[in-house]
Structures are given as structure tokens and as C-alpha cells.
Amino acid sequence: MNHKEAIAAGKTSLGIEFGSTRIKAVLIGEDNAPLASGSHEWENQYENGVWTYSLDAIWNGLQDCYKNLAEDVKNQYGEDLTVIGSIGFSAMMHGYMAFDKNGELLVPFRTWRNTITEAAAKKLTEEFHYNIPERWSIAHLYQAILNKEEHVKDVTFFTTLAGYIHWKMTGEKVLGVGDASGMFPIDSKTKDYDASMIEKFDALTAPCGYSWKLRDILPKALCAGENAGTLTEEGAKLLDVSGRLKPGIPLCPPEGDAGTGMAATNSVAVRTGNVSAGTSVFAMIVLEKELKGVHQAIDLVTTPTGDLVAMVHCNNCTSDLNAWVGLFKEFAESFGVEVDMNKLFSVLYNKALEGDSDCGGLLAYNYFSGESITGFDEGRPLFARSVEGNFNLANFMRVHLFTALGALKNGLDILLKEEKVNIDKIYGHGGLFKTPVVGQRIMAAAMNTPVSVMETAGEGGAWGIAVLASYMKNKAQGESLSDYLNDKVFGGENGVTENPDPSDVKGFDEFLKRYNAGLPIERAAVETLK
Image (tube, rainbow, N blue to C red; front, side, top):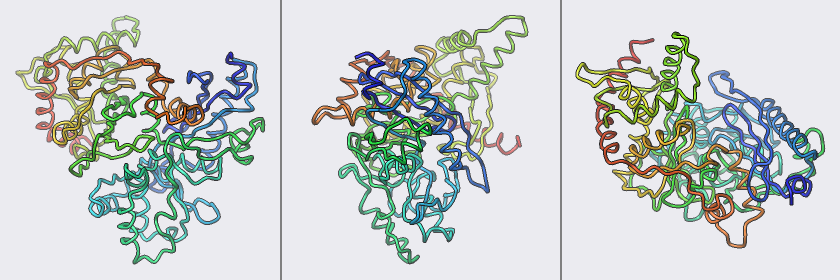
């Protein structure tokens, strides 16, 4: 069956993901290869002290994104998009969308970006003996309770952005277990919310006299592969304002961007993980067992099948590195040299491999914004060196590549050195890995683990949720998600792998000692450079 016939017959799966700056749709065939795509750019708003997206922005963005996808299908294949085999929605995790008994939004959507829940997160972490980050949905709900917000008594349902979209498409108040794990802790044995922590929360809030109990207002958690409802007539009209799309299409559980990233990089199996390195950086590692301690630097979420995942998230990665590359571009252009940015990145990145293993004693911080792992609410990018440092271009580039992963390595060292977590392979994706070999070498040094990059890594989360929708519809009886990804999606592809070089590993450890010892320099910069 060719692509045109597959589209006409509905032998396709559609994934739509709401990122922080772009909504993207990807249509795939039964071989899981992309057929068409569409997108819509959008931005959050800061209103009354809250980062939010309006309901109008959500629906206008979704409809425009879908319209662009349908136009791409029409232009490429001459087909109107009327039937689709399966659909999945995903979005930024966490945040707070609370609704009353009439389905009305009680307060504007509070996104993951808000840091207004410090008191709630601290109290819940103490009560649960489990790290509850500020961006988690339960922290937002409990902070609203601590603030004595009037709306809380009227809550009958609260969810994430992906859960909200899915509810409006199907009428089902459900959530993929990976996205649910960013609302409230999940018990990986039951693949459901942790029952003992729900009891603790209900006991904590009992004096408030609310008519609801926590489980009553949480979406039901579902694992990848489960049917999560079908597209209603109302949902079809909301998605496709042209009216061509027919209802009755099955939907997979809505997932968060962490889960779709795992699917898109084939890192859902135990002892695998992935690192996304761009403007920010985060690492996710699928655990064999629970961690012994509670660590503020480590978030615990799950795979789309409910296996426990340790996540280290840092706000800063390549922004300062890119700024320095931009400076070198300006320097070259001052001499009348026309600069190809891809070549410039390649030359400068590869130069870093010629440097001393520990960056020659140089020091840099890439903090465009605060970094919670090292205790900063604000950041100031800076470069420092002693007069004895080996100051040359190779070490200068190397130190900026190392520091892009400095905060991340602090978090990873908790997992790898304190908790003795075992990792067989890490998959890298994002801008840091666009230049072949270099980003992988640096990441392998930071983690002392082989790092692989696959061609499909650039497809992103919209492709990842499309694959999860395809898995729900096309999996064989008893076929696990890991097996489906290995056999049906990636076809045994392992990508290009870089193994850690012992000299690089030793050098990164030496650099990290200097990095941590120098944090007072960064503190002074924050305090003096207003």
C-alpha cells in the first residue's frame, strides 16, 4: 500500500504535542515513518504573577496546527484527511488546570514554569518522604489550599494540558501514567497513584472540610497500549474546524513530553536513558529499583508503561555556548569572511577535543537563568581563569562544553555514585549533539557511559506520541512497548555510539571540583551585576 492509499484507508497514526513555544503534529504510516506534519508557534503569557496560556490560545493553536497538517497531506498526496487510524496528544508536563462540576476552568492554567509553590512542595516532600518538585500538579493544588484560595472547594477535576485536550476530544478523564507521574507520585508496582501518599494527602487536607477526596479529582492513570477512548463528534469538530474529520477514531493515553521523548529515543527499557540537551538539559534514566534516599535534585517520574524513571533537569545548557560562537562569527565577519554557521560550530566544537582533559584550569558558568541544583534563583554567564591556566582556544571551547553539563553532572553523580544506578546506554538528542562526535564525547565523559545518537532523534515528541498511538492500535498480543520500539520502529538501529574515554572522564571529574568550588564567584556575579 502506498502512502496515498494508506492515508485514504486510515492506516495512519497522528501525534500532536504542545511544546512551550510550538505545537507540532506528525502523521505516520504503519511503518511509523513520518508522512506529513504541521505546526503552530505560540508563547506563554505572564499575567497577575502567573505564567499561563489562555484557553483561546490553546484551541486556536491546536486548530491551526491541525489545519496546517491537513494542508500538508493535501499538497503531498492529494487527499483530504477524513479518517485516521489512531490519535495521541501530549504536552508539557505538570502545571495545574482545575475544573468545576460544569467543566468550567476555575483559575487560569498555571504552567510548569511557575515557581509559586515552594511552601507546598517542601511540606509535601516532608510528609511523603518523596521529592515533590514545585512544578508538579499536586504542589499547585496544595499551594492553593495553603493560600486559602476560594476556588479549591469547587474543584471536581484537575489535570495537565494533555489531559485537558484529551478530555475535550473524548469525554474521558484519563492520563498516561508518565504524565500522571508529574501530577502525583506513582507506585510502579500497581502502575497507579501511590495509595499511601493519597491517604496522607487526604489526612493533611481533612481539616479544610472539602467535599472531595484526592482520588475523586485526579484523572485515571493508564499505561501505553491501553485504549483511552474515541474521538467524539464534538471532539472532531474542535480539532478539525473544516468538519472533514470523522469521529470514532481511537485515542491512546495522553502523555507528557518526558514520555514522548523516551519513546522517540527508544529509551523505555530498564537501564537505558536519554539526555535532551538544548537551551535546557535533562537526563532520564529508567531504574531497576527505587532510590534509597530523597534527593531534591532528582525528580521521579515513569515511562509510558509505568516503570520508575529518575530525572535530572537543569535550566541552562547551550545558550552561553551559542553566544560565544556568535562572537566568533562576528569576529570573522569583521575581516570580511563569510561564515557558514554549521561549519563554525563544527570547527569550534572539534577544537575542544584538542584541549587538556580538565580544560587547562579554566572556569565558566553558563547561567542565563537560575539553577536549582546548585542553589541559584538567578544566573549570570561568566568566564574566569587564573594566570596559571592554560588559556587557548581548545581549552576555551572545552570549558564551555563542560560547563553546559556542569549542573547536570552534579545531579547525575547523585544517581551514579551515591545511588549506584546502573546504565547500559544513553541516547542523546538536541542541539548539543548536532555536531557529530563532540557532544557525545563530552556527555560520555560526564556520565562515564556510552552515548548514542540515532537519526530519528530529531523527530521529536510529536513523533513520539504518534508512535505511542500506533503501538496502541498495531501491537501484537502481549507485545511490550520496548519490543515494539526495537522491532517495529527502530528496526534494530542503535545509532552512532561514543564510548567514554578514561582521560576525558578523569578530566571532567577534575573540572567539576573546580566548578563547585567556584560557585561563590557566580554568587558574587548575581549579587553585583544587577
